Image (cartoon, rainbow, N blue to C red; front, side):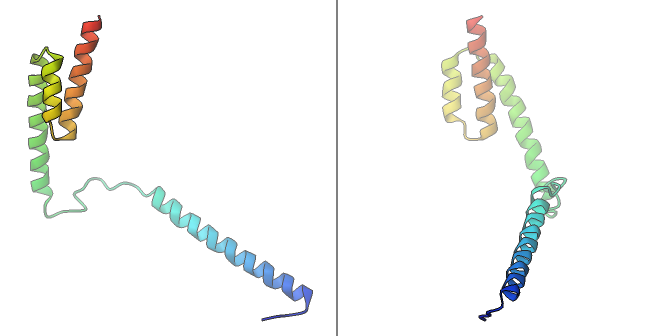
Length: 110
């Protein structure tokens, strides 16, 4: 509503600014609590029913990656590794293959 009293207008504007400041502080606190929320210990809490199954899949994947790592050590051709890299589907597999390629190239340079 309109008011002609300047002192009252100042009080109203001051109260509005205070409410805006409080709202901004609440928003910042909410953002900070989300940003620094401790990570969950693992995905177990998210999916307790499927945890044993997912753990089993993780173990299988780790075993497959270990086997791939041994296989990559035996390969001495960058071309073969490049073919494997193009055929690989999983990120972790590609990561291992790229590391093997870098290692071979470093050995060639030496």
